[in-house]
Length: 489
Ligand code: NAD
Image (cartoon, rainbow, N blue to C red):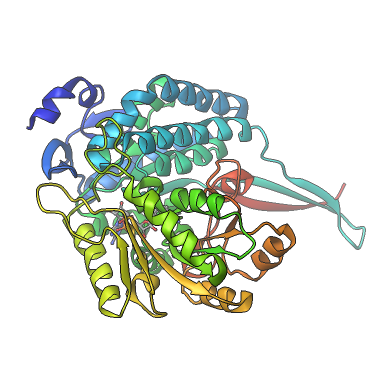
């Protein structure tokens, strides 16, 4: 192991690096392990057990055994356990943030923000656990009552990505536990450590054995596939790419497993001529650069009105250039490395392909040499419609700017994508903001705001950005089945 791992050994060692099944930490059935790498230099920092298909099914056994008792734990008690988990995460916030930096690479301020966001899902769902409210109405014919009750959906498989390794876990575990479900979580192989730390915290908070199980695995397809084929599994909640989401929807069709899908994005960021340009630049810096651009909500395409395009581009370019790039935990660093070599190569290819079509680089755009998967903050102008950087999810620190003249044209270009997760609008005319929002095909819109994520709000996309919502009250209902009882009295 490297110096970095040695330096942080206490941090890395406060929870086991194993599978967590039925309340016990254990090795994978075949002893296989995943190397977790530091994206800042590509060197291993830890190794974690990599579950087999049999381990996945053992986790389903454990979750199924725990379900009956957990589902009838009083909602107040379930809420109090989640509240305790929120408090423990908050107490250990700095350790968790550093752990996220170690395995994911993001800058420490981003990691701290992630921990606060992640913990908030436990607090929010601690409060929601006691508000699973059904309804009663008289049937229109007057013959009976229609009683609707929301029951826990059952054993739930949760699959999460590497870009928010703690928050994507708590965003699923929080509502599932509040609703009375037991879960098996498969974290991304790049970043299993934060999830294992969260599992450890949940046991300290009092979650009973088998209610939360964690099975990291290199063999995602076969392990998740086998769990979906098991008729005891009633729910899949997936966050990741649209490509893998499509595969899992097809796999879930065999046993008609209920699916929530939080998939890719290609967010437009529209700056109208009446916007406050400094505000718009500050918003763009957050919308684009939160998590170094590796966010499904990242502004992927910046459409700027011709009257302010030059000023906006110059100011954005200056702000991007001022960002300090380096190891996420170093002082002053605002932009860490990308997660791995293939992400770095993809971003470089998108930029080169776009420049080849006539775009100009205002800042960045050069792949640095040396160790680690770094890419500089980059601004591109004169980007032609159809350029690869506008079509694909960039997932990196690149801001392509397109100039528009007319509102209808901006809306047409914003909607010209298979994705529909989020859009950002900057305008001093709120009526315009609301009018345009209704014509934008996306599940979330930020008006004069560069961040929309909030545990209290329903997060999710239109079109191929997904199915269902996470966060808010809606996020809890995703882990319930509505049962209607026709009753005469
Ligand atoms: P990914 O789709 O490659 O992987 C996501 C998870 O699925 C990982 O745990 C991975 O191991 C697992 N996986 C991969 N192939 C699988 C298979 N065949 N069967 C079962 N599981 C499989 O995504 P990623 O690269 O980890 O994350 C980046 C993507 O996630 C981006 O597209 C981003 O937009 C998306 N994302 C979406 C949201 C949202 O809320 N909409 C949030 C964060 C990230």
